[in-house]
Length: 218
Image 1 (tube, helix red, strand yellow):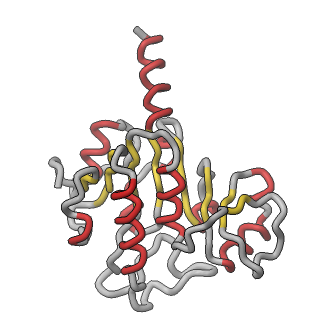
Image 2 (spheres, helix red, strand yellow):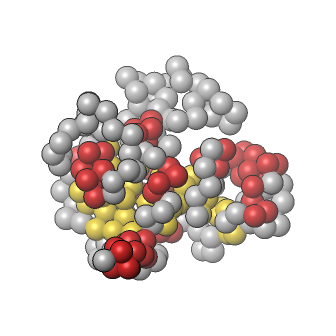
């Protein structure tokens, strides 16, 4: 029985990917636990607190921060070719590259692999009451938390393109109960928006649950 459970978990790991944006809705996710359940694709300053399987950063300032930290020497870091990058050693370059934002690029990268399910976190799009929405607000290379929200139109369009292109993959956007759901993402057949409690039912121990989470799929 124990051997069967291990085999099932290994099979799940091979079929599942987690793509992490840095919107604040991601705060309910237990980063260390999800790495045991599938392949993790993360973006930008995530490396400061966690080591995903693949780190994607396309902003030159962020790439140079990663280089200065030395993280890229022993971890898989992916970016676009750019003259402003301080060093090309130990970096992986998308070729051809999409010219997209880091989050949608990470989602596109994951979708190239034979996963059957991809779970998306921290793709919040909308600001927090009109203010900048990011886990790393008020830190180096990021805007301040009281700055105006970032325009999300391009990010949203890029996400939509990936999900519609890879219709053989079931995508799940994991969000808090009151997180914004853009109209463009409401009627795509292979995309569901689910709460953290829904996610926890399938991946037990992978969230920090609170009484505010809904018990049903949105």
